[in-house]
Image (cartoon, rainbow, N blue to C red):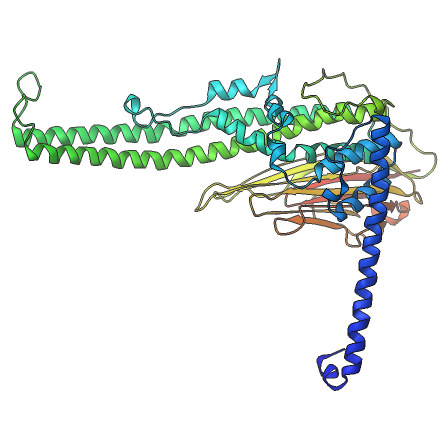
Amino acid sequence: MCVTEQRHDRRHWARGLATGALVLALAGGAACADVVDARRQIDDHVARAFAQGWVMPGVRDLDRYHGDDLVELQQVLDMTGGDDCARAVMTALYLDAHLPPDMDVLFDDYAMSLLAIWKMPDEWDLLSLMASGWTKVVLDGANTGRKLVLTPDAILEANRQRVAQNRARWVQEMVQHALMNGWDGNVVQRAQQMLRDKAARNVAEIEAEMMLAAEAMKAPLAARDAAYAEADRQFRKSYEEIFGPPDVQGAVPERDVGNDERLRIIENVRDDARAVADRAFDAALSKIEARRNREVGIDLQEVAQARLQSLALSHYVLPIIEGRCAEIAQRMSLADPAPQPVRDDPGPAAPQGGHWAMVSQGGMTTFTDNNSCYEPKGSVGAGSGQFSHSKPRCGDAWDAYVVTYTWAAPPPYLVPGQEVPLSASVQGDYAAGWGHGGLFYYYGTEGENCAKGSRATVDIVKDRTDGFIGTAYNQAPSAAWSGTFAPPEGARYKDGRFQMTVTLQPLGCYRYVYEWRE
């Protein structure tokens, strides 16, 4: 009802308010009913886990969790399926990942032990690397012993606290993704190898960044030494002009000038020049240090995430898919199990009759790196991608935000008329106070780029109608959808080919190309 009508008919206006209030009350009541129902079912899962000795959440009191999180957890359990034990594990991991922040979790025994996540015998040991390769620069030589850079212990401790904050979420996301997508032992092993490879790349980046910082420190150090030498030369020149030239051996003759005001003046001039050099040195090295600490910190976080998620696959996922769920220990060990050889997976047999066969797949990054103020980094793999972005230069530095993308890969064969389950999620870490990330899942004719395809020819049924999920620093940090799609008939696409494209904003895309087979 418009404002004018409200002025002329206050009775209708009041009736409209009452109707609106009733609608809001009904909607609120439905939402409350969803929370109550989810809470009841989750409480049953937790009670059953306690009775059976299965994995339990760190905090059992459901009053500590947001109602929307409880509803989402129940939806995740419904989509994932599995037996009671698997549901108990998923429940415990989800609740731990969505527990409101608590400073105690940063300093309990398990959190303090997380330094071990950067120690991998027989491969690489970041604790030793940081200790031996950390460049220490002394500002004033042996006179003061002041160190410009933070110690490696301080850098590791700061990142250990960040790992403690994110650990539960990283573990829960990986376990949920694996179980929702029906991974088997072979897929788990391949995923673990990819995670190990990623961690190794991050270690190489840390070594390169430390070498780059050490090289960059040479120029400011040389400039300071040159400024000191010039200050000393000017001092000697002024001394000679005032008190006379040196003797034949080149030494300045000793005269009784200790109380001469002119000596104190030229000494002050020399000391002021040295102080200017020190300040310039401080400013230059502070920038180098800030960049190095930021980049090393990002890589340390990514190493920790990769290692924890690999450990989670061994600790939680493998026992569940192998029927050993009841053997899962409450606390995940940080000791890395010996990698098992990846077995050849013959995959499913091709269907009889007309069907779509996946003939290629691959990802690409499309973000630009042509602005010297910013430093984007990212990678795209089968079923997952990650993008980070920082602004280390040009005014105030911005710390990096990180966006992680996951999605369910379609199967190698599709038959028209079948219902194929799909899911996707985006998780952003926007502690830096900026950034965004989104994901599109499109279906259409084949193309070579990340542009969105036509959705008109493929039936998608999911809980969102636009195919897009997004997160941002000023919005919810995570988003997800799930549903099904129906493959098209073969004659509906030119040349008997079509593709599914997962567009990852602003990272790139991943494409699955299918060809029709009779």
